[in-house]
Amino acid sequence: MIIKQLEYNDCKGKKYKAKILSNEYLTIEPEGDSFDIKWIKVKEPLVKELEDDMLSE
Image 1 (cartoon, rainbow, N blue to C red):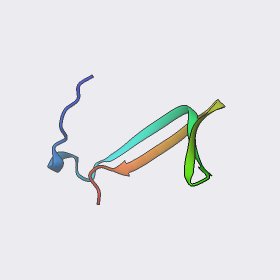
Image 2: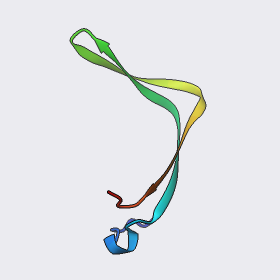
Image 3: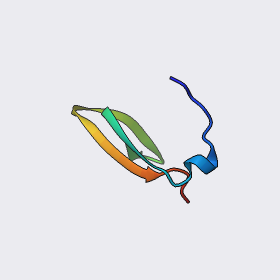
């Protein structure tokens, strides 16, 4: 894998798509004066698809 810096003028406004798969998620619940944070495992993978413009405002 090659990681390189994005060229602003070449990338601005170009669309991209991504898919995130996970078998767990975070839950945040109030507990007293603070919060309790736990990872919850799921049987079926969670899928989140994203589509956006690069370097958009």
